Image (cartoon, rainbow, N blue to C red; front, side, top):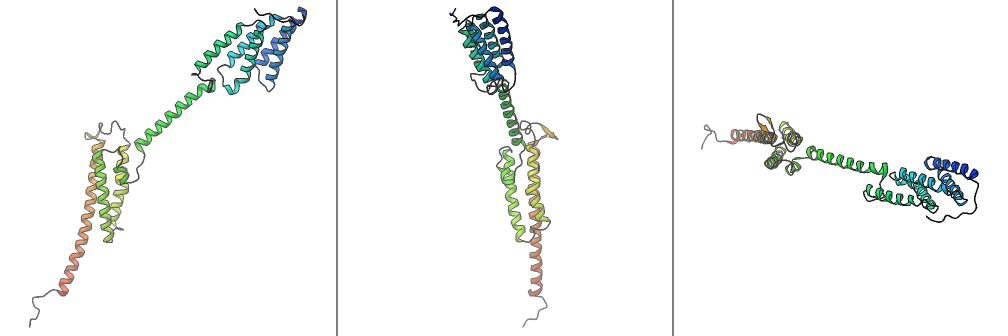
Length: 289
């Protein structure tokens, strides 16, 4: 038990009521709100220390208990908001341990260790704010993962080139897409040479390349990745099989457009041949000298 210094002794009739008022003021200032609560708490601790120095040694125990209660109340709170009340509590415990309340030091030490480990080994990001932060981070990670999943499942692809290199599309379908892109390019070039690109044939090839094929691929990518090649969708066919059939239809459609354009070109050639044959060809009734 430490020797408690005494400057002079106040009568019990004075120190008792004054000590009670001081303890009440200390409780109010420790747990109240307002811009002056810190000053009021320090003042109450100073008065309590003065009473202990004037013979009211008993006041050290309740003051230490109040400071310990303050430490418990704010230990798991946000450091940004709780450092002032925690500092007051620690100062009070240390100061009044000199007046005999040494037990409070051990309690604060054990509680500090408990708070440190329950915060994950860190004094940062604790309390109500700290406990919310991991959940917020987990929610953000979950939201990002969900967004990535949605993007990986159904993000739009720009053109046949991108689709032909998209690993989410089955390998054989990617080969069909590459073939479709090449045929569209060749057919479009032929149509432009023949002046047919602005007509029905050019429009059909454009729609196949920029609308029909991308829409078919997007519809496939909208299926759950784990079920696209397993779950039958129609007539026992999976999404993979249906996509392959659609691409075959589009390949055949491009071939048809090319064949029709070739026929038109052939008709022009035949018409020219008939014209030239009629104009310059040798007739059976021509006069011979």
